[in-house]
Image (tube, rainbow, N blue to C red; front, side):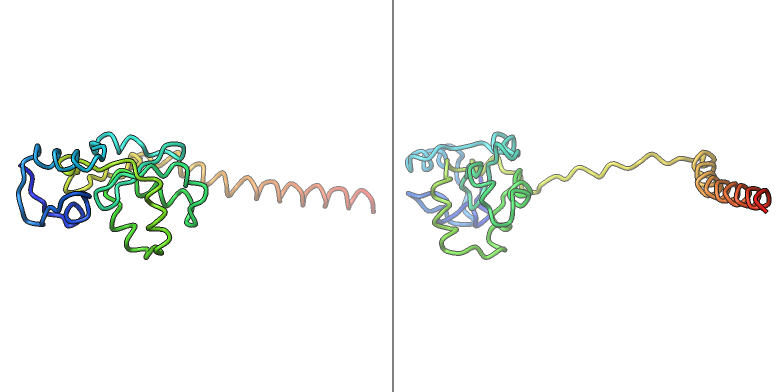
Length: 170
């Protein structure tokens, strides 16, 4: 059984039927409704794998789009599209305020529906990797001292050479 808790998976998500928010349906029921519309159902795990410039799929309003051919033409650049992979990109898409033409253009990239039972409720973010703490800072300190002293030594040597050659010429 799945509960339709997110409005992105209700209403226009399935072309032939309407799944009201707050209702619970069996997974078989949802799949049958989706198959009745003739749309291919994609698992979220499958969609997540398509996250490269040469192979980019997005999930928007419960629909799956292969936007690979559009990567070079997207006005915001391919980085924007790549940042929307691996999650439900509906909010990202709607927040921008795309034109009616952009909404119509989406039809040519439509490849099917997302199986809502496979979409995680929350996106898990890997914690940022931290550089190991260096308790022994002597090597870093030595490098910083050398970075300061070596230029001073070169400058001092240049003055000494100039002073020595100046005395010889006089």
